[in-house]
Image (cartoon, rainbow, N blue to C red; front, side, top):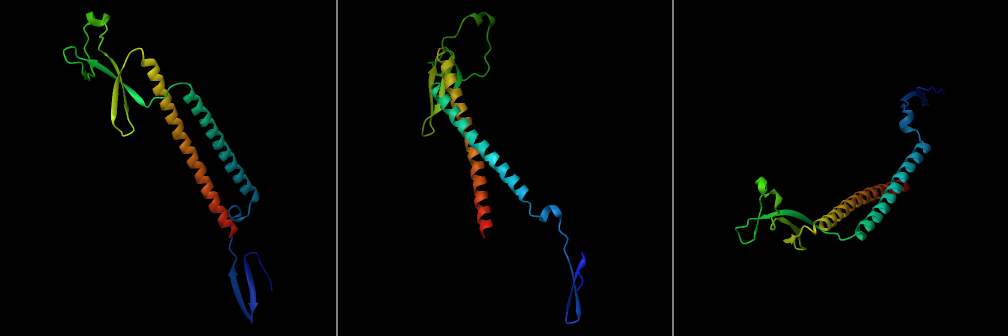
Length: 174
């Protein structure tokens, strides 16, 4: 019986049977424990970075929430027409006479708007003295909302990795 690198020859009952030995790519078929370990280390690094990011998000959220009022609302500018009963009239473009620039319209200002728990719109006047604190409270709400969205993204990544690893482990146990 002779074995060559290209063909295997088996003799059986005086018959010569020839089979082709498949050629495998060195990179695709070799068991490479170093590559597997490297991939696991990379996944570990990603997960620990996500864990740290979740801790940072929690700390930032706590800091923002403790820095003052959080308000889920928005400000709208409003202008009243002096001839009406005081109802706000939305006017996107106002023409101003240069002589009137020195006077401030006492009825002009802002209103605070938001949605209640049922989705109904609410509004209330917002004085010029309140604008800064209300704006900061709205900004804090937006920051918390952005952090909550990022937290959901990170948690989704972690859940996906966990699902994939559980499936892989089940496959490897079989």
